[in-house]
Image (cartoon, rainbow, N blue to C red; front, side):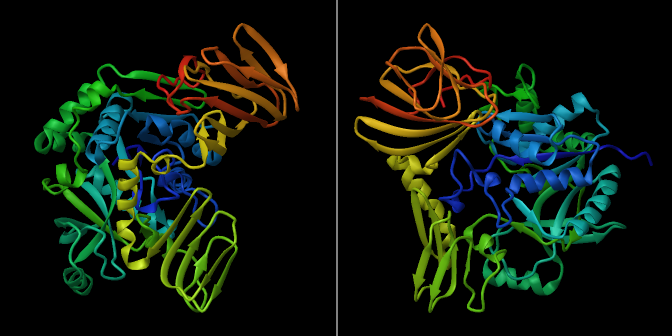
Length: 481
């Protein structure tokens, strides 16, 4: 049999509310660093390229995450030009995978095989994973929709399960999908040896997938096809893709691929594997991969444990000391602190819900906020002022923009800035400054080879990040963020 190309499809759209305060809406869990310093997305790109080195991964993600995704891919493959499908909002996995299949049908052909990989999974045994993918690739070319089943290590109520059906040469037919079970049911599943954790990864030939979607979820298929009739092309350095229009995308049903297709189709197979898989969905999952001491304590920062057991500290460089704690999760970031009972980690999402209701910025933004051109960090703020530290990458430029309500004062700390201020364009060096009144067009550019650092002092009655009117932008942003 001629081997069909195996194209990794990376799903990178979840917000990871249970991993707050590290995971936030503007920088969700795929960009969360593991103990080795690598993000989950970077690890996913690495796995994808090791398995299919001749094929460029297709990433389905939110428009907001394009530049961060591009930067993560560049750390793995510096010369590779990434391919992206950009969603205006998350609509669950059925729409994302269907869009990828339709795009690959148009650009590669019906014979292409998709290897669908969520960007927030951790796989410790990559050799075993590769073996499972080889089996799945073969089954996909035989006309199966293939999913991966993980041999359960303990009763887990946070995962879905797959019941093994009739044996196949390279796996099993999938007899049943079971949603998150009770503890008693999960215990029976572990004992009977017939149930596997549903890893949420798939291997499917484009033609088979689209045929099954037409039969079982034609509403999703038709809505996704409409999105690809007139998308906006996105062409940036090392990033090529399609940006889907919100007016079209809002008609795509928000449903998981399991509910839309896998639970309905009769052509589903499962490949069992013990690949060291973990769905990094909560702080308890992060804690499990950390190296603990004899008392079960673990930390990612400088820590002191006194008479503590089963305490996990996730820090950002600051010393964290604990006394007499037991079964606690402590997550310390520059602007938010989480203290949580280990048994209640699923309820962290309620914090995010309440922050959204209050419109508190901590649900969305970190103190240090990433932008395509670099970062900014809020150092201090009050009712009528805000002070930021801005870093601009070499060769990068902020948009030509205007603010309606705030004035800005820029002071260069390090590097040389090219400044547009109204009708003037001039250079600023260290210890030099400029004042930008409200309603003046302005831009900041780093033409040098080193990071440009400036201090920005804002003043005015309204200092929100949405007070931006863009006129020109090398990053193709058409909204106010």
